[in-house]
Length: 169
Image (cartoon, rainbow, N blue to C red; front, side, top):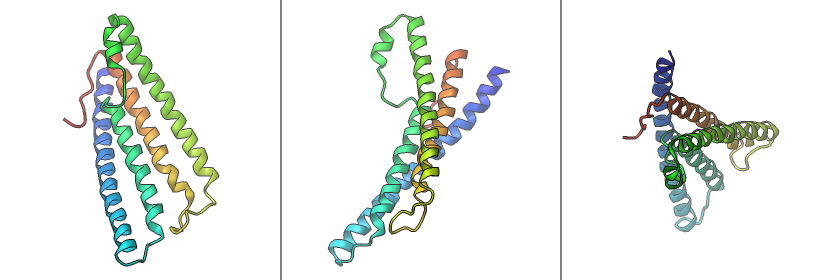
C-alpha cells in the first residue's frame, strides 16, 4: 500500500515539478521581454513606463520561487554531498532524512510567513499596477506548498528505499 501511495505521489509531484519549471521559464521569458521593453521605451523614446519595475519584481519572485521548488523535487539544491558520502551508511541515511525534514520545516515557514504577509498587506496596493500587495506573496506560499510535497515524497522514498525519478531527464 505504501508503494502505491508513493507511486501516486511521485506521479503527481513529477507533474507539478514540470509545471513549476515551465511556469518559471515562461516568467523568465516574460521578465526578459518586459525589461527590454522598459529599456527601449526609456532610452529610445524617452517615455519610461512606470509599471515595468513592479511587473519585473513580481516576475523575479515567480522565477526564483518556482525554480527553487522544482529544485527540491530533483535534489538540485545546494548540498554537501561529499560530506554525507564520507559518512557510514546509517549516518548518511539519517543526514538525508534530516535534510528532508528541515526542508519541510523551511517550506512550512515559507507558507505560514508568506500567508501572514499576504493577509497583512491585503489592503495595500502595488504602485502603478493597482493590484493588492498580497500578490507578491503568492509565489512564496505556492513554492512552500510544493516544497513540502516534494520533500515528503523524498522522505517516503528514503524510507522505502526507492529512488525519486527526476522530473527533468
